[in-house]
Every structure is written in structure tokens, then in C-alpha cells.
Image (tube, rainbow, N blue to C red; front, side, top):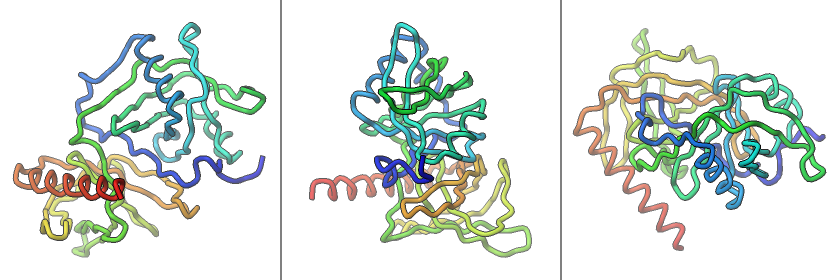
Amino acid sequence: MAEQENPKHEAQTPVPLISEGVDVSNYLLHTPMEIAYVLRSLEQKGDLVSVYYDHGENSFLSAILSVDPKSQRFWFDISGVEAINRSFLRSDHMVFAAAPEGVKIQFVLDSTVSLVEYDDKPAFEAGFPNDVIKLQRREYFRLETPIGRPLQCRLPQPNGSMLVLPLHDISIGGMGLWISGQVEVQQMDVFHGCRIDLGTFGHIEVTLEIRSKRQVTKRDGTVQVMLGTRFVDLPRNTENTLQRYIAQLERERHQLLRN
């Protein structure tokens, strides 16, 4: 197989994971019937699924090919890159994320994944997850920030300098930040006094906790590192400003879709 991304998926952006610290206990589906319904819905609508592995360090885009409620197994697309498929099969913890019609779906596989033939083509086969998160709380949806009006976050460093990082996405729970070069940032690091310029909504100051650090393949094929962050003890007035900014982003996105 050629070392290239699946043409069906290459122009798509990975679905970000639900921010750690979000209480999802009321949004868990446990029964095989409920899980089969969610997986089959993803299959029938052809929604892309982001598959994270190696503790979130790597990911690829896939799609559910078939679901068998009786055997509680399902099949999904392999990556178009052989090296990714090999490393994925060695992983023992995979997280799947999708956002059909704005509803966040996420589940974890700790069981063995097999490489099989499906419809005369290679595919992955796995058993049902133990549970599925179906999160419809809009305030935790992460929206990509405008490329034409890029946002930046300034993180104070111990030596007094400022690390300026562009945003990829933002929500009330946290945001994704791009980093480049040899930036020494580790999971669970906490940064106080971080400043974000929200344009006409002004500046906000937040405390950020680093929750993940992973490689992402961008639309142009380049690979960059993204930090997943969580807001810590977000003040009410800051949260209100963020809600208004996110609402404005949604209005602009809907306007573009109508045009």
C-alpha cells in the first residue's frame, strides 16, 4: 500500500477529544443496544471518526464500515499509511471521537483490534466498547478559531519571557494550541496569567493546565504538535466573555454555510 493518506479523509480535520475534567457521567451509554445504535448511526451517515492512540500522541481519520449487534463487533477503515496501521495494532488503548451534527461522541477501546478483510479490502475489526459518551452539552463543543483572524495565547515562562502560541480551537472547557520547535511543555503543567486576545471582545486572562500533547497531520500534509489545555477555575466574567465569543463564532459559521 502506498504511503499516503486515504483520499476520502485527507482534507478533514481531526475531531478534538472532550476536555479532561468534564463530567460526562450523565452522558454515558452502557447497553449493547445503545452502543450499536450510535455506531450504526455513524456508519449510515458516513461520519468520519478520529482515532487516537499511543495515549493521544498519534491519530488518524477513519469511518465505521459495518456494525454487528449480535456479535457486538464493528469494522472501521484503516489508515492509508502502513506505518500508522502497524503502530496502531500494537497499541492497547484507543480513543474514538466524532461530532455528527454537533453531538460529541467518544469511546475507548482497550480490547484487541484485528486487521481483516472487509468487502475485499483491508479493515480493522474490534469488539464493542464498554460504554459510549454522547455529549450534547454545547458549551463544551470546541470550535476551530478563524484562520483569517488567528488568535494567540501568551504563556508566561519561568525565565520571564512569553511563549506565544496560536490557537486551533476553543471552548468553555479549554482550547487547543499549536507548538513548534523544542518547547519544553509537559502534561499537567499549569500556567498562570495566560492572556488571549479575542479581538473585539478584548483580552482575557486565564490559568491553563496542559492535558495532552500529540502530533496532528494538518490539511497541507505537514505534521505539527498540538497541546490540549483545560481552563482552571475560570472566573465567571471571563466565562461569560468566552460564551459570547463562541456564540459569535457559531453565528459566523452558520452564515457562511447559508451563503
